[in-house]
Length: 257
Length: 262
Image (cartoon, rainbow over all chains, first blue to last red; front, side, top):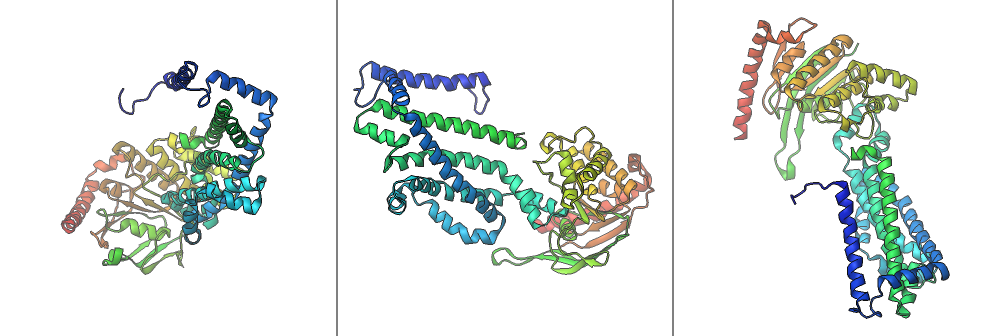
């Protein structure tokens, strides 16, 4: 092995899969071999079987649907406001000076600590869950987008000015297209975080969703179901991540030339 | 046609953290006639690029003013096209879209844009590369696109800030010939900043030599080599004479710059 030397694509996927195989192998060995009591950790076979029961008989698909809707709803709401505000802050320094200190402060407020307040304000319905995801993603998005837009190469801005662009033209035809691929990457990253917030929201005061299923299973000591729930989140997260990456690469092919 | 008049333009940069302000450019006066190809030559840091940026409207003078067709310059505009030393093509646009950037900003019809773009792409020898992205082009090709992009806008004056500075010697020589042939064709007024003596003499009809920082015009030479110029002009006796004069001037100023930096 040499530092920074590339591996062939085949070997890369092979190594990636190998870790999954090892992971499941160790898990199966520890549980099926009887080294870990069933109450603490279910074995993979029981996990898959109870996962099937969950989906086929207990309407877990509906829970998954609810969770996905909450993530997307909260995330889209945050994006719709955060992107224009972030662009405005990146482009216009007085706007940045006005919002930046507060947003920087708000970013460090732990979103999950808002749950009691949000329950007080919005009850335990959908609004509370969407609001939590909104709080968790919005401030992060705004700050990162503002930095990315503000970091546009100055010589490109100057070139556009000498080609006759006006101030709005600079924003529309230089700052936004320049930062667009990075903004898309930021959205992908923050969407991943939104997935962790939604589960937190569903652990408390929810009557459906993946997080709710996990809390219910805890009461029943059903570790097989808990693990199945966790893996479901992982798989959905992975799928959305890959899809996001594909779309980004298609939209902003120039950035990866 | 159009004339550029630089009238006692000076630039002082404010001191950093309460330090003394830096005088970058002493009040400089230069009149550029229509169709002039003026090269501005000087040691690095002499303020020649600052002067060009002031003409472009990207920097503001702290003294004097610049008039273009008797109108004072206030900010950048499409009437002064510029090619930078760094590669400033928009990486998200293809070659054709880059060249059309200014035309689109003017609100020109798409068909007309395409026609103009095609003409200038052919002129800089990049036919077949219309749909390429800047990152797929070599440095020399990128600068040719940048030149085409500036020319497509039909500016009154073309400002070039060491546009070939980052290119290797052979490519640079070819670019000079290309620029010269385009200038002989369009007869645009050109203000070209460089620190390369051969380049300065080969293309210009007037060569302005700057002093060490704070810059001022130290010498001004009429380059009386006949146009159209062929690259072989570089081996003529007259070229060598001019080069000897300019070399002496520049050498003295470069030595002063080195002295100052000690």
